[in-house]
Length: 366
Image (tube, rainbow, N blue to C red; front, top):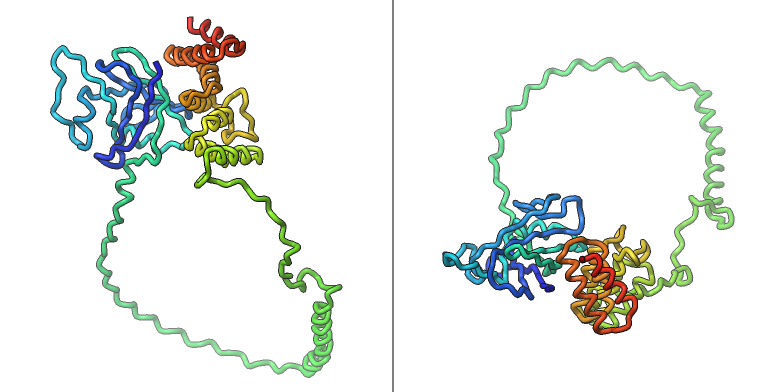
């Protein structure tokens, strides 16, 4: 059973608080916990107090209904009846210990949320509503306090200067000899001639050195015509035009710009954009020229393929099923991979590649 989960801002409380919205969970009662994992770093699991750690950690969920706490920072006085299983809320309220560590991560980080209901595990890729506001946003909105005025210090009386020593006697000037005077007169024509030569040398364009040349104005012929680069955003474009612009950026070896445009094209309704995003990270298709990431990342690729699968794309189902089947031992993700591959085989009977991949995954899941 595939479920959907998304983290959004909690409008009833403010920055630093959010709601994890769960969709597709069939169970309505039971003890609910969740584990949050990121796909980067040596400490992938979010532990208590908002710190990342290497060991898996499970966060408990309040048994009270989520609507009893919505719009209020205080918990409502509602208790579950003795012997009755607690109801599973559709919206899980979380605070700064969950929201702030997510806000501090780069947008390229993918988060996996695993729910447990009475021991049964349900994994999902946690979608993040952007912009997600951390608790620091509350303080940024307030003006900074005025600096505290300190009283001016009372100036100390200036010390009485010591009496200056009497000036030393200046020796009488020595009269210059007439020989030096005549030598100066003799050098005047030489200096004047050198100055005239330097002035004339700078006026001759053929003999002008780099120090004498003046900066020439740029003419129309010297200006190189730059090629028109693809747009950096898809504002005002259709999904097809945005997808074409993303393909153009990718062909121009601009993977960062291409990733941004592919994401915008996907939001406009182009499922193939999800496939291209997945190929940027897929270990089978990754390359340094066409990927914004320094290395392949199967989890990020599976995330984008899964998004394409949700939009009904066959290549997305095959890509996500292949990566989940070959890169994880988690029974929940293997079950999700089998679900995707079986649907692909059912919709396209006779596809040898899909059937072989399904058989491989079924053998691994035994």
